[in-house]
Amino acid sequence: DIQMTQSPSSLPASVGDRVTITCRASQSIRSYLNWYQQKPGKAPKLLIYTASSLITGVPSRFSGSGSGTDFTLTISSLQPEDFATYYCQQNYQTPITFGQGTRLDIK
Amino acid sequence: QLQLVESGGGVVQPGRSLRLSCAASGFTFSTYAMNWVRQAPGKGLEWVALISSDGKNQYFADSVRGRFIISRDNSKSTLYLQMNSLRDEDTAVYYCTRGVGFGDRTCDYWGQGTLVTVSS
Image (tube, rainbow over all chains, first blue to last red; front, top):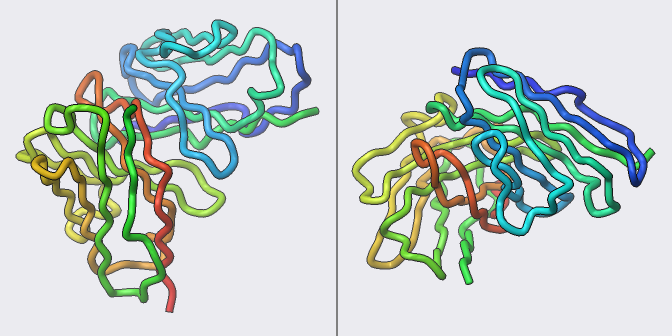
């Protein structure tokens, strides 16, 4: 199975900050990497697919990059609604695997 | 508008069975693969199972293989998860998701989830 490791596990930040979350795969997954946002009590929401493609309607302050084993999610200027937990997920092969999550907290 | 609505969750004793349903609307259900993904209380996301659009191919996480069955009724636009021999560690919110992209393994829409609690 492909292991997905996110860092950090939690990230205190302030409105307006630029933040970066890292996701590392245990083997190459080419660009088959997705990012999800989850708010408390809600279902996850797909933000970015295939490493860097933004879902329609997702603000342009979100961006993704990477290929192979190393990936990043960047939020260029944090807004209040961005405080949530973010998960990476590989869709290169089954079993589908997720990172353990990065909780973005208000500093 | 696209909707996925799960039902069937509840409290069940270890070793017993439960069947979850997911009613889909707002898209052509029969042309999409579907997944179940779960989340234990306070924990991260765990993929459970995937079924192809025609129902002929199914894939399972090791943690549920042999105990859970994924199926679908395209005439009713409904996805199912039959959960047998339930264990404490199966306690989670179960989400149904639509599968797209490479290998149908990207979850582009999610239901609101249904809570399964396994407890004696």
